[in-house]
Length: 296
Image (cartoon, rainbow, N blue to C red; front, side):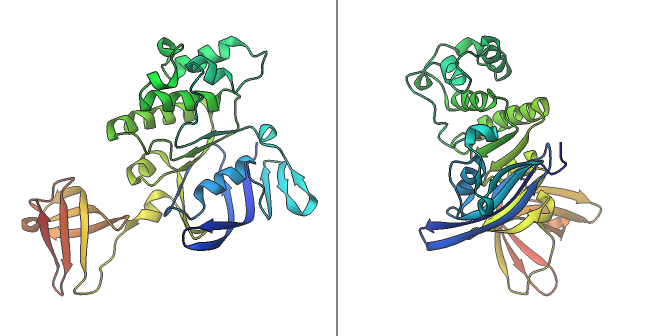
């Protein structure tokens, strides 16, 4: 297996709320990695997943997986979605309402499939006891696990996840993140995950691709993309949320979420007394040092 199994260059026209945009993307996904794809709504993230899966044909481009060519517009090569062996989980789960949990998972398999494959997946996502229920009888987290099991049923080489946890509360998100990590480790999958959640990105992703207007504007590890340590100009006022505050000798090192970036800055201890994780604050930069006002 190649160390860079998915290699693509795509050009495709998008229609967005802000008008037409040309998607122009080149990227590689490392074998066995989890890559987070993030950026504002309407920049082409979902379209990119559909292009990779073969659900949409781009104007021009080339996609290879290892030595296999999935798409080559110049030579008129286009592999069908079935032949690409890609698992895709949508934000709305897309379960069949008239089918049971077992039937939804089995739907992704060949007609003469081995029933033990479905049993194995249901055990893995802890849904064996709910196998005969319909989707409307399940919680959001349970429906998401059915969708994951169905995507894994045909043993995909690549798993594409389109904001799969965005509709869940924080506790359920964290539990489903545990499932994703377990599935990733057990199946040795390469995963491309669309998400806006920074906590999710830092917990799951090896690398991040940040999209703007159809292009990858920034890439790297979560720390490289999202952690900033700099001193803004005098008079700057920033509104943020405390992530952590570490007291060291005569100062405190604060990590805070500001404008979708994680910023680090140092403060005298007296200024950091009320900077507990989860609290909001205003940060005013002056000539001497930052001045913090905690918003209670």
